Length: 285
Ligand SMILES: NC(=O)c1ccc[n+]([C@@H]2O[C@H](COP(=O)([O-])OP(=O)(O)OC[C@H]3O[C@@H](n4cnc5c(N)ncnc54)[C@H](O)[C@@H]3O)[C@@H](O)[C@H]2O)c1
Image 1 (cartoon, rainbow, N blue to C red):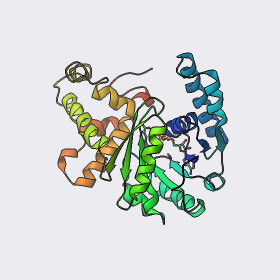
Image 2: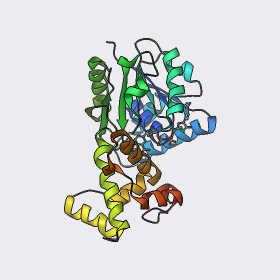
Image 3: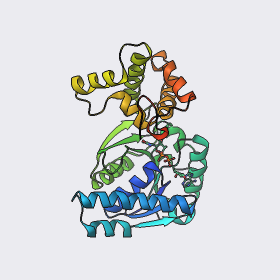
Image 4: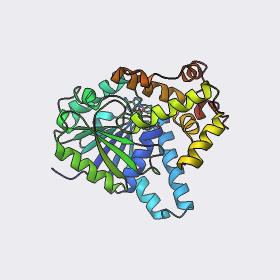
């Protein structure tokens, strides 16, 4: 299998701009694809800001910053950008019909050798792969937010993913300075299968009046050495995202242990989604 040199990142939001940033910083040629010029501009300026922060903290030099930016080609044309890509990483919103449409387009245009990776956090890799005619070259590459900082990439194999593709994506992740952990496709993969029930249980503790959010988070930080308590983390992830993933686990396993706490449902209904709305279990600036 040929080496991965050219990468197209589809979607330049929270995850996509971080993914483009780490690939470009590691010397890959990156096309960053968005739907509108202002979204593309915002994605590039976020990357610039994050690179500036790395320069000021002396993690990279000014020269590395310029080289990284030179490696990124902003694009509004998906077809053109995937035409010569060795790897396409999809990071559009977590919505199956939208992802399906994007994959059909990529599959139609990308060369036969191109590997397609998705950053989905909860949709079945096998189901997404089935939308294309290359299920053996389809894989989950689950990065974590903020991408330039977090070391983990959960590599998720669909039912038909070719082991050579897995190996290649693991090698590529290492080139990004990440630690790839291979897992098999299953609702929530490993990360959210373990994390979301813990967050849900912490919310039950608030719901049942067992402790305040601050106290529950302190128990987990001071007693379990978690760097961030589960309720603070839930606010950071977004309470709507947490509810959505819990529903995926509940529907996927048909097991009541994944039933979302009624307080979580109510907070999402009320629009208290955490950091992004300024209020969740905590007040945010
Ligand atoms: N945010 C997280 O913490 C996190 C963590 C891990 C995985 N994920 C997953 O990553 C994916 C992206 O999440 P996000 O938080 O970056 O979402 P986001 O909404 O911040 O960004 C998605 C971007 O995709 C763009 N987009 C939509 N349709 C497009 C198209 N057809 N072509 C090109 N761009 C298009 C949107 O304009 C938007 O900027 C989702 O599948 C999500 O589940 C998110």
